[in-house]
Every structure is written in structure tokens, then in C-alpha cells.
Amino acid sequence: REPPFLVVSMQEYESGALYVEVAHTIHPLIRTIALEKPLYPSSWTIQLHSGEARNTEAVVAKLKSLAESASGGDTFISVAQDGMGRHRFVRLQDAISALQVKGLADQKLQLYEEAEVKARRAQLLYARAQVEQSGPAKQHDLSHELA
Image 1 (cartoon, rainbow, N blue to C red):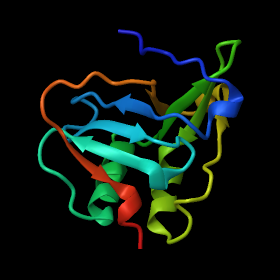
Image 2: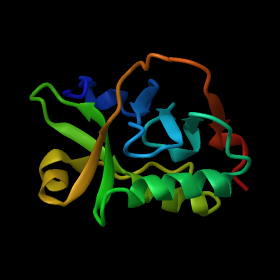
Image 3: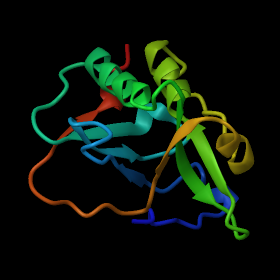
Image 4: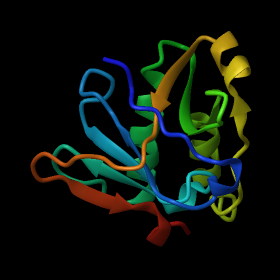
């Protein structure tokens, strides 16, 4: 099944929540990554299939395991698509690094062009404007636990 694509203007990168549905085969615990402000990882939250992470370190560990599921490659999340159909991505490993250092989680992540991302051996995830919820999920908000 083709991922749903979202056409977002370049000015909208910093506003408007996007959601990444994570297939159970990619990561058995993470259901959804909500990107409140896609370029700022401190605004990201995670919905789990069951249970919840109790601290930022546990959430970072889950994101690391998601990144490691890429079989040695990088993991990128598409956060926008221009009128020509070209995607813009953030790198999951950049977000993880930012969340681990006080003060960096509020700094803007680097955007990667589609051609550069596709040239790498990378796992690609696609964010969209809305996610359909099916059943209960617990949410862990990263923005309140950064120390």
C-alpha cells in the first residue's frame, strides 16, 4: 500500500502537527509518532500500542530501536512535499541526538532533500496531517521531561 502523501508549503514546516503511523512489523511497541512541530523534536510525542515510557531516556531508547530497525541504514521521516512532488525529510538519528542534549531539542532539525535521502540506504517513514485511531493508546509527551 502506498503511503498517503501530504503536500505542505515550505512555510508550513514549523507549524501544523503531522503523524507517522509505525507498522507493527517495523517496531512492535510504537504505534504513532506525533510531530507537533516537525522540525523541533521537543514537540514530538509517542503513542504506544500498550504501556508507556516513563522518562525521556526510555522514549529515546524506543526511538533508537526504531532507527536500528533500518538494517544498518538511516531512518528518515518525510515532513513535507512541494508542488513538484519532491519530499523533504528529517533524520530520526538527528532528533535522537538532539533529545539527548539539554537545549538541542528546541533547535530546528536539518532538512534533507529527497534525492539525497533516496541515494542512501534508508528506511523512509511518511508523516501525514491526521492519523486514524483504532483502540486505546497511551501517549508520552517528550516536551515536559527534557532536563
